[in-house]
Image (tube, one colour):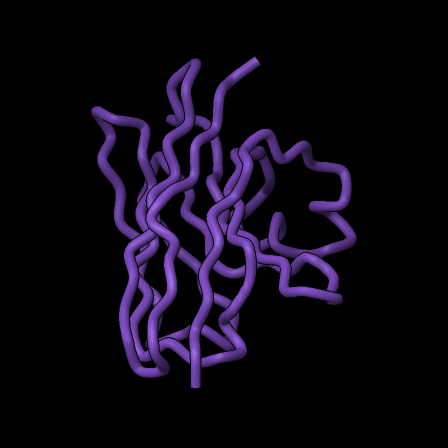
Length: 129
């Protein structure tokens, strides 16, 4: 089973920035999508952003659009999530996973990703006001 390691979380003040990393071991991601998800205390997990690895095409949910940016390192099988202008409502544990879908945004739908296996421990992001 492929290992998934999320890192880069921390505590920042509102308006600050963090860069999260998601490294997925195992086979090439060439035919996969990779997505970031988050779960805030007392709330359901939600999709945040994703990338179709082969094309580099990305998608962001409205709540993070223009604040979060995805990038990747093919050689390291790593997807980065650069988060800027952080808000207290961004506080959550952030997870990533690989999946296969018609488009990466499909995998951010909770009706779809409820069937995914999240193998990583996640990384905690806390934004103070």
